[in-house]
Picture 1 (cartoon, helix red, strand yellow):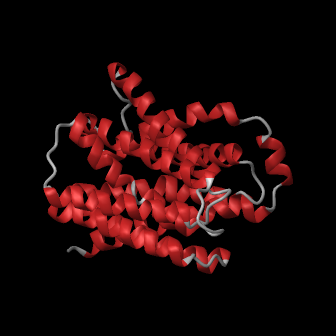
Picture 2 (cartoon, helix red, strand yellow):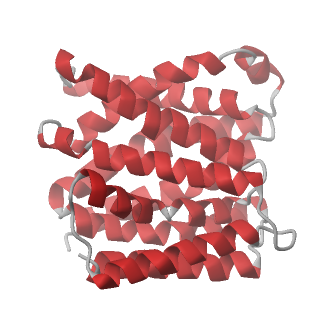
Picture 3 (tube, rainbow, N blue to C red):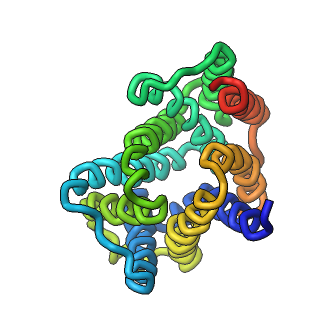
Amino acid sequence: MDFRIIMALAITLIFWASAFAGIRAGLKGYSPGNLVLLRFLTASIALSVYAVITRMPLPERKDLPAIFLLGFLGITVYHLALTFGELKVTAGSASLLIASGPIFTAILAIFILKEKIKIWGWIGIVISFFGVSLVAIGEGEGVRFEPGAFLILIAAISTSFYFVLQKPYLKKYSPLKFAAYAIWSGTFFQIFFSRGLLQNIKTAPIEATLAIIYMGIFPAALAYITWAYVLSRIPASLAGSYLYLSPVLAILIAWVWLGEIPFFLSLVGGFLALTGVIIVNLWGR
């Protein structure tokens, strides 16, 4: 594999994995709604600068309703549910739960895109759902379901709809262009959470503000550029398989950045969830 592709993959995975710890750091000074809004205002500005420099064209008017819907699902709902969920769930476990997204994507693809999944695919789905359940049950304080875990599952489901429903539009727009359109439209819906943002900026610890700015520029903007580069050079299915390394990186980053030690049951569940996802992608299609 070309060295530039390897570097782009590494940058993408590290930045996306670090976002889970970044959210935890940002929540020390911001409400979930304000955190998400500031993060994507930063991302939108960064992508707007990139769009101006590269003279990125605007989408066709007829595609705007779908783009706004997908931005709402993949950016607004996903990130709000994830951020609110991280109030109760550790960063590493949040990443493991989000890793169930490909499982939901596979199920939706069967019904919406009429894709076929072999018996090994169904076996992988069952294993992954069992693993995700263990993560949700074992999040730190005994065998009980945590509300935060369910919010993160909602985030995984919403982003799965985003992945499946955007597929027809990726034939018309490049991954980078469509990602930029989605981020801009998703940020529009987040304006409803602007109340108290200026006050938060004034009173929040500088570390929390810097963490959010970091997430806006790098995991939410720059990583989309490097990911688009990867997608333009290798098959999407091959590129997607590397995303399963993200939860492992997230646990390591959360351990180093936040001092969070993952619970054993969450690790077991995460391992099973990732194993199932790998089975679906390698032998299920």
